[in-house]
Image (cartoon, rainbow, N blue to C red; front, side, top):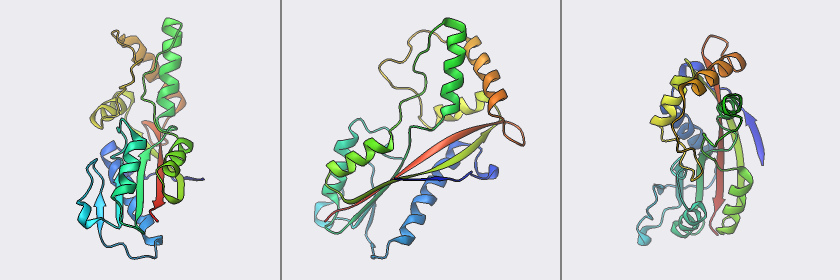
Length: 215
């Protein structure tokens, strides 16, 4: 497993809409290193392609993010590939939004003496590697690239998280009303600890890339 750190230019890093485009571009750039021709490409959206016309390349750009059964999805992708085909996918990984997690947790501890899970759990590289192997992929590789996003403030970040569907669906998420004071305190902590050089705040995104072949 390899790690790469690569800040995203601020002109491209203002919203999570740009993040999807960046993920897709980075995923496509990896195909340049594949020497075998893979002309029949299928973008995975949870539905297997026609079994009589199996693709030799299946890609997934953040489409596995909300999969309720990630292992099952990878099994299905492996089965849908033609023999000798490649799967290449990207997800948002566990280290993403660590700044937000830390500030929300500290603010809640200060105000209530305890902390709740307020940012969704995200997949980790080790478990994804195990899933690839268990699904039957040969030569499985998992690696990551980190990107830095810039937002005006915590409110803008939270808005983009909701717009992108990155809200907390965990069964143990807090059900009670969240007081405004919590977000105000979290915003103050965030601004003080994670300022962007030219104004605003920074947020880290951890892209995790999956590669695997079907023999």
